[in-house]
Length: 156
Image 1: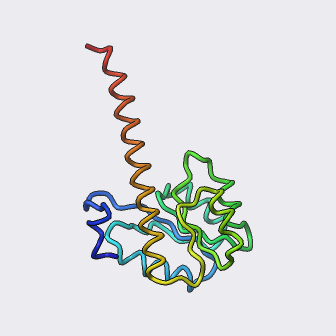
Image 2: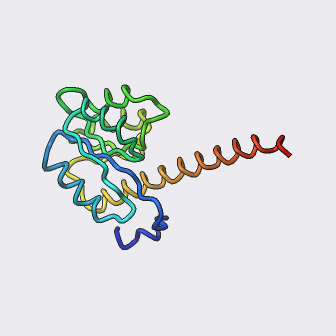
């Protein structure tokens, strides 16, 4: 997918701040390796558990989060519950159990990766997630422009 980066909207300007959270080292390594191929992605951190994930999300404010569900200290859904909705990044749920897929949809995850996943499945999930990040960014910029325009109308 790296060769298609321009095709899916990366303009070389701002990279997408991305966080990986999984309690399994090989799973984190695989995600990191796949994400490092993508010029639009900036991996800003990695976490091994839910409580660490909450702290990393608050510290780094990622735009995109690859989140394992089954973790010992706090599961992925607990992580989402602990993050204020306004600060919640776009989520790609990564799980070994398909029973979490329905709940992932309810949590408004952009995609769900069922372990083990293929490179093609990863690329499809990443594309969907990046589209969501771009839509959020465009919406935030539009809101900012509208707010700043409203503030200047009465000044003339």
